[in-house]
Structure formats: C-alpha cells, structure tokens
Image (cartoon, rainbow, N blue to C red; front, side, top):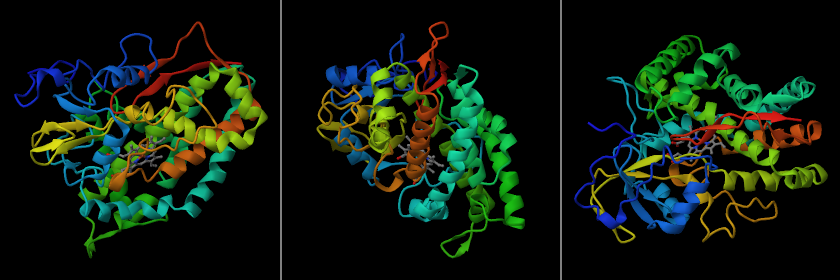
Length: 401
Ligand code: HEM
C-alpha cells in the first residue's frame, strides 16, 4: 500500500487533465517561502484539481470556492476528520466539534464559547502583554534568539495553558504531541493516544473537583440535557490543545521572518504604531497556514467538476491568502490594503473560535517587540526551517539584532 507521501491511484471519475502533481502537506521542494508554491499553482493549475498524495483528494484553489465549501456542511462533511489521514487508536474519542457537522457540532462548540468572548479575551490580553514584555526583556541583551523556541512557543502557549489551568511545565511534553497532529510524516496514532491519556486524567480530576477553568466547564457540561461523557469531554479538550498550541506560534513565525527581511515594514510600524491593527489583518491574510479537510457527502457537480461520495477535499487556506482575483499583487504585504482575513480562520459553522485571541496576541507581539527590538535580521549562518502538513509553520527561526 502506498504511504501518504507516495502517489495513490487516481479514481476513474477523475479526468487526467484535472490531476496535478502537488502534495499540499509537503509543498516545499527547494528554498521557497511556504506560500509561493500555492500562488504558482493558482496561476497554472485548474481551479479545482486532484492531488494523488495523502490518499488522493480534491484541492480548491479559488478563495470564493473555499468559502463556499467551508460553509456548505451539507455537501462537504467534517465527519471524516479535519485532516486527510486522521490515524487514531481503536475507540478513540471524536475531536468535537471539528469532526462533527451541525447541528451536533454547534452543541459541542457552545461548551467553550464563554472562554472566547470579548471580556474573557481582554483579561487574557493583560496577562499576555506582561508575559511578552518579560520574554523580550529577557532576550534583548543576548542580541540573538531562536524565535520559535525562545518566544513563539512561550507566549500563546502559556496563555492557553492558563485558560485550561494546566501546569506550565507540561508545555514541553504537550508541544511535540500536539505538533505531531499537524505535521506530515510525524507519528500520529501513538502521539494522539498520549494526548487522550493526558486530557483524560485532567477531565476526570476536574469532573470530580471542578475549578473555574475551561476543562472544568467542559468536564461538567450538559449535552442535550444529559451529562457529557468522559469520552466526549476528552475529545473536546484534546481538540482545544491541538488548536491552541501551534497556530498562533506558527503565524508569529511567518510574521517575524518577513519583518526580519523588510526594514521598510518594520520602520512603518515603529513610526506609526496606529497601523498595527491593520498590519495584523494583512499578516493574517497573507500568512494563512492551515489546510483542513472535508469529505464529499454524495455524488455531485461542484463548479463543473464531478465529485463522488467519499472523495476527500482539502480546503487549503494558503490558496485563499494569495488569490489574485481578490488581492492585487497577493504576495506583497501592504498595511493600507483593505483585505480582511476572509478564509484564514475558515468560514461557516467551524469558523475559528480562537481568532480574537490570536489577533490580540499578534498585536501584542508587534507592539512590544518593535518597541524594544526595532531592528533585527535573519541569521545568515543559520537559515530558517519550515515544517509542513496540516499547518505550514517554522520550526527554526534564528534572529539577530
Ligand atoms: C492564527 C491563529 C489561528 C488560525 C490561523 C486558525 C485557523 C483555524 C481554521 C481555519 C479553523 C477551521 C477549521 C475547519 O473548518 O475545519 C479553525 C477552527 C478551530 N480553531 Fe483555530 N486558528 C487559530 C487560532 C486558534 C486558537 C488560539 C485556538 C484555541 C485557543 C483555536 C481553536 C480552534 C478550534 C477549537 C476550532 C474548531 C471549531 C469548530 O469546529 O467549530 N484556534 N481554526
């Protein structure tokens, strides 16, 4: 049997002219930036094409088609998994709500809604700013850092660990387990099993002795008038760990790699800090980095393409970021662009509940870093490294100042 990284036989209903040799989980061949291959394909590939990798699946390259599919759970189901190859141990919990469709998906989504409302996020913002200042002040006199390990894997992750009241020292154990779920070629089954065991222990403790935190709320919640089961609470809590641990850190990596190479953009933000909120929107637009999956519910035509029930479809948000139909010169960063993030956080029923927290943490990064370290570059002797899969992220980003 072919592995995910090898090509799979193309099904009979896929015409040869719609097959493109592109692996969205491993898009980088040489030293390109993560988003460049997506734009290159958008210019030369059919709007909807079949990739023979990762089991074989459709890819939608137009931003408007992505938005339509994100919203249309009747035709594009999440129940087959949010990634193309979700390998799970037997009897594993569902990662609710991301692996469910409405209306059940909405019932599970409500379990964590209160943690993401404006007042809750504002309170987190004060903690996040204090932590950002402490981290940057600690790094400043060094004249260099490895941004991912020294900053990005601290700020968003420590704030998230406080939301769920998990010990900060568990960060180093949880990070590789959560990262394995979003990186191609990382071991999935054994790592998610360890995550389930970890959240299982905490869910049971909090069900017996609830506190004020998010896991306690989930562990003691009601689903349609009956108590949530341990299995369900473990699924929701594990999804939050996967969603909360990698994405903001990844976005920070893309932003800092760009700023390290663009003194003009750094200067603009240092001289006009009022531009920072729109800069955050433009960075979120440009550096969309997640590739969630769907399954086709029944045989259908989608914009002239015949799809069969069970076909997998990848909703690669990097395509939405660089669609020239929406954005002139899409790879350029323009802080005056009225772009909107459109599909970076998805759309429709699963739209990211963490988007407000993510925006706030990115704003704090820009405000506090650029005030303290306005000039920095990449390290020419130690180039950045990407890791790709469900998310496209930096794993190594040395900076000098
Ligand atoms: C820049 C940072 C982030 C990006 C780019 C991002 C992206 C996304 C996207 C595209 C989706 C939709 C997935 C789908 O439709 O299948 C999503 C859903 C989700 N995200 Fe985020 N996310 C970010 C930050 C966060 C944070 C900070 C958290 C939690 C602390 C979080 C938790 C979730 C959860 C729980 C879902 C599933 C919602 C549902 O199924 O109803 N995300 N995210």
